[in-house]
Amino acid sequence: MAQKGEWTRIGGDLPGFVAVPASPPPWPALIVVHAIMGIDTHIEALCAQFAAEGYYAACPDIYAPDPGFKQHAHADIEIAAHMGADAAEQKEKLAQYPPEQQARIVKAREWINARQGHTYIDTVRGAYDRLSHQRDIRAIGAIGFCMGGRLVGELATTGAALAAGVIHYGGPPKLDLVPKIVAPLAGHYAATDTPITGRIPAFAAAMKAAGKEFSYYVYEADHGFSLGNTRFPEQAKLAMARSREFLAERLRPLAAAAE
Image (cartoon, rainbow, N blue to C red; front, side):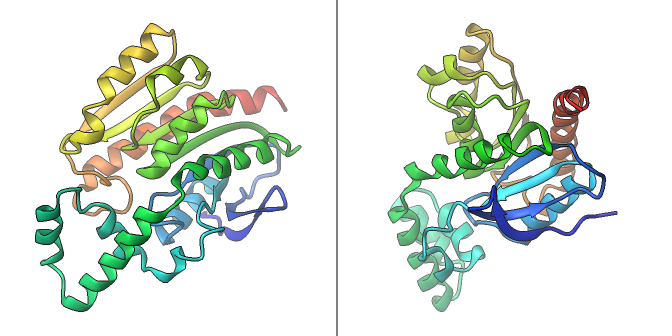
């Protein structure tokens, strides 16, 4: 039976969305790191699904300190985020939408460009630190999508003792930070997403050279394929099944051993 989540404060002071299992504690915890669109209905549903599987699922609200975020619709932010850097390409993509939406997309793009993205890892690390101090939590994993996937990788480079980290089409961490990673990682990437997927082999090689665990898959799909994108249902289903298997194999034994 699916669990309902709620907007609350992780650790008492960090805004976010949390879904708690129906089973009694202690639980393995899962930090769900949202994509650039923020905590939308898909992320809320995903947290609830993970809770139904026995995880204490917590999604920190990275945009809580940013009043500008709420001025834009999730859909407009998603479009604006994936317009590309080329001016001609942006103009071509904007032309696909009615004039009133074009104006909203342009404003969303301006907000994206002005964000303080370098601070986002502090929020994600904050969620990890708070869960680490909860007496009812026994092991912690993380899964993130797009921007959130990149942040899972960044969280690993802070030395966070994650039982597992899953990256969905997020840019890899800087190679010189690989030695700081202690968590086993898995990645899921899109074949057409060259700016990100093209950097993964070098990251995989650096992880292997440093004796770190990293496995990854590339799907015949576009960026964002596993986050509510109905264009690639089979790829999304497979990627999430693999993600769940990876998380379960690493979190559940640790949580059980600590009871």
